[in-house]
Length: 227
Image (tube, rainbow, N blue to C red; front, top):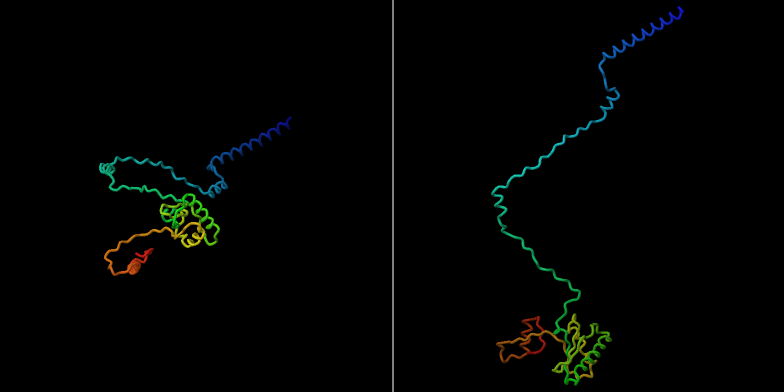
């Protein structure tokens, strides 16, 4: 029993010493300044750059100002010049060319006498001459479209609207041969002409001289007949 008591006393003394040492350490730690950030953490914070956001500012709405009397008068003042836009419409493009006048599309054959049935004779002549045009190797123009016989015994052919009668002038002899059954005295193509009235011509002047003077004065004129 005595041995046990001695061991217990030794054990109590050891525990008392341990408690005394721990209380001293706690007292020392309490006297030191408290540090919340460790050294590695402080280095990491110093390495990362800090971005500063600019303070948000609220824009004030512009204050409305009342117009002055001069500004009101200037707005009510009428404009001196006004812009006028043209109302002209653009020309429409046509697929087919503009046709020539009928007076420029005639080929005329003068007859000594007219047949009894003018319409039948004109239709037959149109068939004959169109067959000649299509079969002849030298004629490259299209056939005629109309034919009729006038009261003055003229067999008149009308060419297509996009062609002129003067284009068929080189083939008049061929047409006369094809129409040999008709009493043809002469042939011509329709052309525009102008009649001149000349004053003050001496009586001794010949028509040939007058014609020469006109052609020399106006070179663009084409004299069809001797005046």
